[in-house]
Length: 462
Ligand code: MN
Ligand code: MN
Image (cartoon, rainbow, N blue to C red; front, top):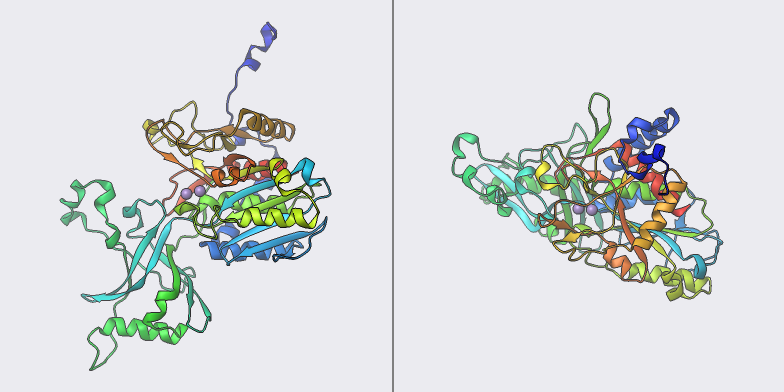
């Protein structure tokens, strides 16, 4: 027997609530970090806006723009903007890349939403509508009867890019998707929840006043096109080359009498992206460190701004080329945190969680050894060695953390960008915040988990 009788307790592992043990000083830091995060997420509803905001923070912290072909040297602090929708930041440390590799944290800055269709505008019975096409996994009925804002860009034939943002300021109008009144919903309420509201019913109300005209029949549509033309110099055809996203017009808010939680649109995955960003901005590591804020995770990390793009490998190659190091060897010695959210145990829905292995609110950042579905299908499944390595770092730096699985086996599943980084022969593990009501228009996290995630990411790249 290795342990004395009096130490029986130390044989057990128990999760604790971070708020129970946090020091006064740490709680102050937690509140400050939460304020900064609220500020960030309010300005970052789309990947384009998150990219822009991250770039500004990078510049404020002494980073400068990197382009392919540029020679790099030890001490360089660089950011690379990928088509305005994704950003990669890196700092070249003095440690040998071929021995220490690169410490990478990768998260995503896109969130579920409704995109406008290429031909969105039409008039019907006193309303002018925009047709939308949902992006990512949503419960469609949740997007009705809430205030909606529009964010995006319209690109004209001459290449000019017009930015659009309407619905965030109190003096601006918002947009609206209707639902059926309960009085007439007896048939609707008998349907499966996935069919309560169909994709083609997610039509945004954008106007209702007509423009006086003899020759045009659709007078409300004409009036909206007049307004858009006046404000943005665009016509109906310009929507074809646009990316306009309909997102909830809610601001991030503190939740609860004690303000323990934060609700916001797009916590997934800005609540991991922001701690990643802050970790590299605040880092003075001797290792080379990199933070990837990717796009398109919610639709499978596809395309050249998603994490499956060769861009990540290309940038590692460029760093190695500049420093005269072997890229393959460097990648084999590198480690990556795939920073993405997981589900939070919800006492209102205990039936979907396995309580010994669900992430609990306020118990710290969550290490997910694997995700996937059914028999771990599609999962990265980090090695015991890598989890051991992470444990060692977190224990040394006194990080509040826990392990977690999304839900009960065979109930559902999920994936992250972990697989795509791991494919580059990089040891990769999923770590991130537990989120309540993930993918809803308004999600909830704990300030304790947000702050512990920042501390965990900082410790990892230290
Ligand atoms: Mn995510
Ligand atoms: Mn997601």
